[in-house]
Length: 421
Image (cartoon, rainbow, N blue to C red):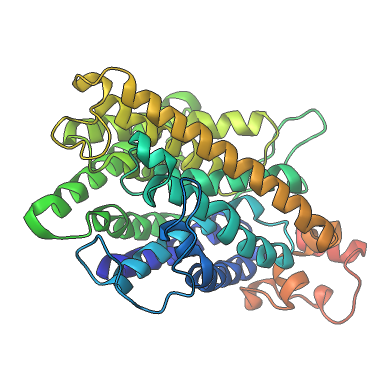
């Protein structure tokens, strides 16, 4: 239960991460929609999500245990309600990751509708395949705490949203070169990483489902080492390539290390955890640059932090899983298992990633036509989603201006000039 609370508190980390990484005029909107998303996912998970994942069904989906009422769940040695709360927290985090791809340009209505659809049609099937006794679990897919189930799933939904929403105004020039739209509070982003880092002990170590026999502590150690290694490697590679020690890149390296070790934290030794984190920090640096060169506007870097690092983390057990710790599946390539487990891990990445992207893309297309567009108007985007979607600013004393009062039209030259200034 304590681990469940730690994971839920990670929502607070994501609030600071997303608001700090975006512009001031959208801060209140982003903070509010993150709480709203967790509220929606909680109700949907209670009604159908838990049953779709853990209910009796077939290799593709669960078909029972809907409208969970607090009864015990067979097969685990703890309260059914505690297990339910723990799994609910994971579902909420995956949706929060997905919404990183919507930032600064999506209608509030698109969040509302997609939160419901993602929580029914995207996250539960993948979670069932790997954690609920589905077809990938039968192959021995290793994903201890969710590099694929939670992070890659959310990232692929974010990719679908980013493609459909298209880049923010001013992000790219006509020649394809990118402009840097800096977030408004780097202190927020640093604090968010610390909060997420601490919450991750609930995420990973909590997945042992017990504090007995020291395994909880071992998984915590692996988690911390990978995060530390990702922090260092991302800073160093940015320093080498850019000539400056980039603080946001360092913070993304911390998160990449955490995402990468999430799949393997219970299957690998501590040395491997360090290697996994080091590689994740380098990968996230080059992944961010790659997506930007391809014209994909990813304000929170969800595709790289949760997607690229999620892929690497899932594949890493195929290299580093030990004979003693591989309670699911088989040892990795470097520990005498050959390529078999690596192949299983690659299959899981491909199937889960492709499913999450395609289904999210189709669902978002449907939402687009139902609510008549996913994206706010140009004028609303310029003035900021705080005012255009909610009628008030997250920082009213800083952003309130006589030029933005009353019923002045959004598309006036004076309003645009005031916002830009």
